[in-house]
Image (cartoon, rainbow over all chains, first blue to last red; front, side, top):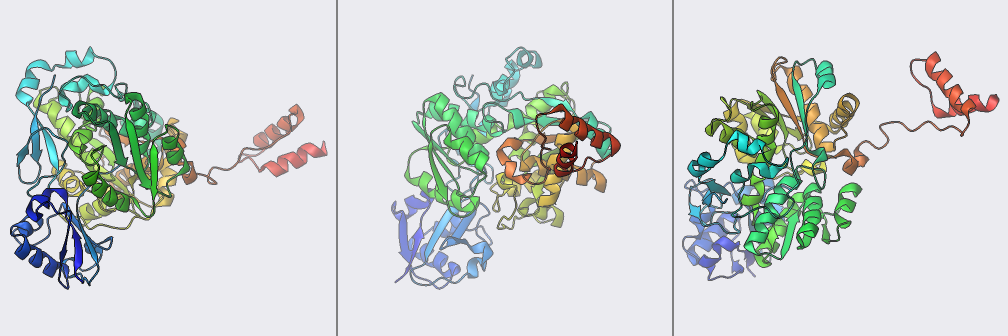
Length: 91
Length: 428
């Protein structure tokens, strides 16, 4: 059973308008690489030239921000839910 | 009117048409409203502004509508007061309070941004508006939605202060409490905003919404007699307000309304939720998110969307950032109340306490004009000071009781407790 990735609106043109896709991988880094091979171009939208996740993108594994974990080395396991969410203003 | 050209990505510069969108499709950077400043310069003068009604729309050319404002048009133009008593306590020469705790209609600076957001939402033809909120934004959206005849959905952390919760419920919107902190509410709302086609004040109409904050800065400059202060202390949650105040001052400099825009900006946070001030103090360019733990709920945002740019703005202006403990912020609330007669909420207590700290550190010189930004009202966060202000002294409805109490007061510098006074009264 792979992990589920929720795709934010701006990236849906790349996933054939799918709101969520299923990908395999053991870490966020592997998930990103596998997303790229399935949907070419998606990684460069999520990561900068150095391969770092762009500063206005938040990535969550089961509701926990990966910056509170091991960033791209954060482990993921089958059935996990990954959300990619643009930064939101205060309120 | 209508001087907005487009939306532009603050990160990569990609331009977009004026639509209810907030992030760049290429790099996810925030979109910013682009104005035709050359055309504005031809029509906007200080005299024209001065001739208009005293509300935030006196600067309407610098706000992001295509037509006239239709919602919340009485927001803004709150008092800028000379804080002579606080000056004495802090040992400074010229100090002002910009007081949005009396903003209209819901007593916080959010009345400004919501007036801009809902007026724009109406232009776009939305029938439903929504927001994720730490309290004040929800109050403002709910109230102004009623005025505008719009349906509203308010998403908030379930454990908000009673005053903030009731101050939303009373207007009759759909209110959803969400377990956990504001950052979780925000994340959920981002997904909801992608699915339901509403105008989310702080999400898909954010570029327009956040422009409303500029008027806080415009007013400070105008109310000082067309002069930019040397120092401004601003509370920071998501980090947007401090950027927009700086932008406002730069706009007025660009139009030649003021000779200089050399204001230094200082950000204030609660130590229990201080990702931006931590970055400034450590010299980091990036924000490390935190999990908030402070009573200053209105500014308890651990993952501030505009944090990166707030750090840049503070550095560019030559300012600094500080944070204070919950105890210090309560003392800040009491200090402002006892010197200037202004009861501010927890965020205001943070801002006053940080201003005091920066003055004591020598970061803000004692002899230069300084403005403290008060953005919310203390009646909404009474829990913060509950049990820390003493109690009313109880007496019976007799002059004897009161005389006994007065005797106590005059015979001792510090008034004693109620029980003693009552006991004394009973003896007589």
